[in-house]
Length: 352
Picture 1 (cartoon, one colour):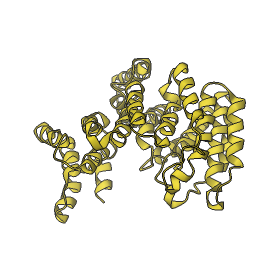
Picture 2 (picture 1 turned 120 degrees about the vertical axis):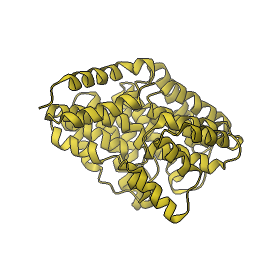
Picture 3 (picture 1 turned 90 degrees about the vertical axis):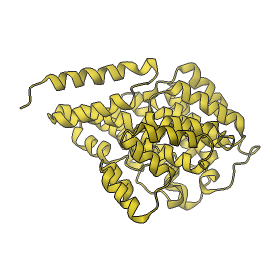
Picture 4 (picture 1 turned 30 degrees about the horizontal axis):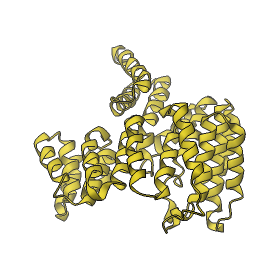
């Protein structure tokens, strides 16, 4: 209930719900202070984040301010505090990287991921680095993509077993998925399709076979979109049906966020604004990688709303994109400049 109230921009109702339960914690306090632009309380909480607040509470503050309020720039100091904590060398730096990616800041995000990778031999860090590097809108330089591809390929699951857990048990298959997307991003469609074929024949339990089909379909769709074949991408994505086991639904990449994004992109490329609008409006709320996609989803919604003549919705969506990516990497700044130019045009138009 509190999450819903925050997402509906009703902080007063959210605070009332928490007060009624008498359960306001550090993360709640950070979220409410951020929502009220209460700088005095924020300074105090950040000081606590560096030392006295529990690591878990600091992590939750990053999540609630960055994802619930959709203000990753405001959440960033909490993420940096988590990364600086002794117990945060891995989790804190991965959290910081996720926060920075939400802001279009791949360069510093990658540095945090490298720190996390050096702090532990857990293969999930290099896999996550590979996943984020393949996001097409981050435009990761080719040399970095090639280096990350070599790093992911160098991991041998047989020699470095994964930690226990349902998601970790599928890391060897996720390795094929990441390598497929990296190959696609590097223009090596044949190699990407070989990785997709490996996924489709992966030796997994019957319950996980639909997940493998979905991952393979996303790789195939990515290759098709890269070749400007949106109809083929949509055909491939028919295999993505949301058949995700509950114990995997909250873990990336099993939540199918990227497949939904690809579907929206393919629909736009095919000229089907109405269906693309449905996917972008409702496909990412509360999903595992919501914040990684939120800025780009907002820009695409603005574009669709503008074409439909829904002026205020277009303004709101472009404004959100420009705010989320205000400090993006310099090579990504043209996208922000484009959004701001569209905003200037829309706000200058006389109201009908």
